[in-house]
Length: 349
Ligand SMILES: Nc1ncnc2c1ncn2[C@@H]1O[C@H](COP(=O)(O)OP(=O)(O)OP(=O)(O)O)[C@@H](O)[C@H]1O
Ligand SMILES: [Mg+2]
Image: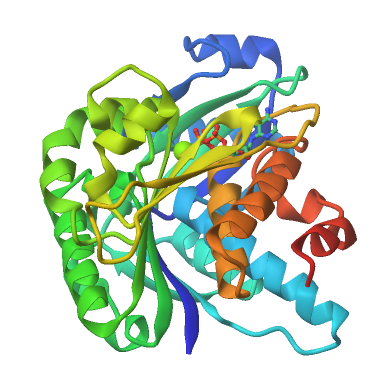
């Protein structure tokens, strides 16, 4: 039995610590996220990699960050009860047939994750992150092989054995990725696997709104998004409750993330679409946020982990807020930098 089967875009985070001059020479605003092509990516990679300068490699991408969080939580729990680490979490996607792809798979396996990653005849996707002395992160992403993920890369036998299927709206980028997700969801619905979907970003919702509105109903158990994403989906600007009411038929449970204010949950009474939604405000945690990278990804990890450990949705969301609030106090989506005993205490495990 597996806990979560995640499908995402494997992107190696290549983190380079550089001068302001170097960052400025790239001609992009500090803190921006930029999509670059293969040639630009190769050139920048060679530049951050030269003269033995310090670089960090993290197996990243939004979905992978969530699966890493789940594996980290389970590993710290098992360590405490003195049991060997398990491999409950599965991560699937596509990398290139190159050194970076092999490194990516090996890093994920080192975190204790079972990988079902296809190798394509192209370069592995990466996010080159230029960190300046003030800790500002300017990102240059090349999706590369991720975009070639297809339905043939799904291990349906493993998916069938999983409790949750998790993915994000980034998978709508190509027809081949999108069709793979639709096949996986179809299969999940027929085999009783719960489906959890994160809208990914306001630009994703703007681009695929019509498709989401027609495809989501009946396919999703838990729908996650931030305020901007839900607003865009609902097509209205009013308060959070009104927004969630407008899109209530899209999933059984809606979770609207509100940054430092935590989240709001809307639950549909099972089997009865005419009953009013049940709303719960789940307050955020007050922290000194340093870098909000990975907040949403850690939130998903906390939520799924809570549910897997038998918590109800509200209690799982409280833990999700907690884990996400810890992640924003450290640079990047770096679970290893967190104080594991406090996290376990909050998870009440
Ligand atoms: N400044 C903050 N202080 C405390 N908690 C925070 C802060 N920012 C984010 N969080 C936590 O992280 C969760 C997710 O953040 P957010 O609402 O920004 O979602 P998101 O937009 O999906 O995030 P991302 O930009 O990573 O995709 C919040 O619900 C909250 O629990
Ligand atoms: Mg998000």
